[in-house]
Structures are given as C-alpha cells and as structure tokens.
Amino acid sequence: MYYAFDTEVFSHDWLFVFKDLATGEYTRIHNNNYQLKQFVTEEKVFFGFNAKRYDQFIMRAILTGADNSRVKEMNDYLIAGNFGWDHWCLKEHPIYLNVVDLMDDMQLGLSLKAIEGHLGLAIRESAVSFDIDRRLNKDELEEAFQYCQYDVDMIEELIKLRKDYLKTKLSIGRMVGIQDVKALSMTNAKLTAAFLGAKQVPRYDERQYTYPENLNLNLIPRDVKAFYDQMKDESISSEDLFNRKIDVELAPGVVATYGFGGIHQAIPNYQEVAEGNRIIRNYDVASLYPSLMVLYG
Image (tube, rainbow, N blue to C red; front, side, top):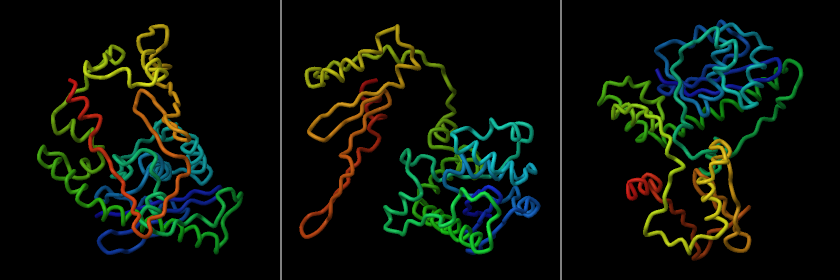
C-alpha cells in the first residue's frame, strides 16, 4: 500500500495527512499517538518530500511515545540542522519505517514550493503561524490540515511526473534482488553501487590533481587559477580547503562562484517574459562531471 504524506508541527499540536495513492482517500491524524501507531504498519510505504531529513523523524518520535512538547523539541532540533538519528530519543528507540523521499536525486536545494511554481500551480503558504504558543482552535486546525493536504496532493503529482524514473529504480533493484521499497528509498548513487556490487574504498588523492594537458591555462582568470592552486598548499587543511569559495565577475553584473564541488553562475533576480516571437529555452548538460571524469581518466 502506497501513501503520500506530510506533517506539520506547532508548539502544542502536531498533525499528519496521508493519501492512499490507489483510492485517493485521506487519513488525518492530530495529537493521537495511538492512532498513528495503528495506522503506520510494515506493509505501507510512505512517499514524502524532504521526508528523510524531517517528516520521518517526527513520525518516529511520536511512535516512540513522545508527547507534544517532545515532538516540538524534535521539530526544533531538525530545523536547526541536526540529524534526527542523533537525537537521544531515537538513539534509545530505533524504529523501522518504509519511507521514500522524492527529494533524493533532485536538484540540490529544490523545494516543494519551487516545484509548484515551476508547474504553474498555486504556491500556498500556511495562514496559521507556527509561532502560536497555545493549542490551535478549531478553525486554525482545519486551516493547518488544508495546508498540509495541499502539499500531500503536490507530492502525489510529483510521483506521477516521476513515474518512469521510479519504475526504472524498481527494475534495477529487481535485477539484483533488492526489495522494491528498499530500491525506491535508495539514492541513485547507493542503488548503482548495490547493483554493481561496489565496495567503498578510502581515497586520499583528491589534492594530487593535475590539469589536463589540452587545457589552455591562459583562458582561466588569474584569480581562479590561483584559487585552485591552493590544493598544493599543505599548510591548508583539507576541511578548510574544500569549504572555500571564490566569486569572480565574468561580465558586468554576472558573478560566478567557484568551489571544489563545482561552479555556479546566475544573473541575480533575472526576469524574462516569453511573448511574441521571443521564447525561453533551458538547456542542461547531461552528466557533465561523470563525463569529464571518464574523458580524463
């Protein structure tokens, strides 16, 4: 049984909305630990967005018996950037869940709200403040449920859009005997590694990089070349080095940010309208970095 789900947490309230992807039926649960325990079973698979970093840990905390104050504590702990498994209540009470995060293998930093905007759908924000320091009244609770349900519907739409992608993950997993829910919950990198039987090997040569022989170094801005040459400076720790970035203005108002993980460049707050004979085209280079790695060994 497959469900789309989402959760909202307030100071004195928590709520979940689940949608059966086969029947379209919604299940609402509010401040009821027992009801959630009865609903969440091993044969159910839950699809969320950012679920691996947030929603699943809220659910796990409740399933361990957390009261409302502890659920809020977990919420604040996660929002502060901490990892749910490091929270003491989950260290003491590990619980297995079938959770698939649609955020995996998507553009880093892409939010559900951004996807709604890209699809031309309404972007709905909560009309109920998350800072309310009391129990929600009846109208506020209904509004919170409606807000949560809207995101659940969007998750269902995302599942439909990525149906072929998800089917491919299932097919790859089945070829090597990986259970469906396990294959769906793995990132592309982990699934590929499992498919190939790869084993993790420690690497210590990332600072021994040499520039390709056919690279014209004269075309590289001097500041950028000096930035990457820092990798030869043994007085700089790897932790410090690989967190460094440099901004270079390549054209008036066009700044490129270089780092050891790649390059990003965009015109700030750029707007364009496609009208008349003017169209907007978006081009993407498929597998740029893997291709470069293969090309240069």
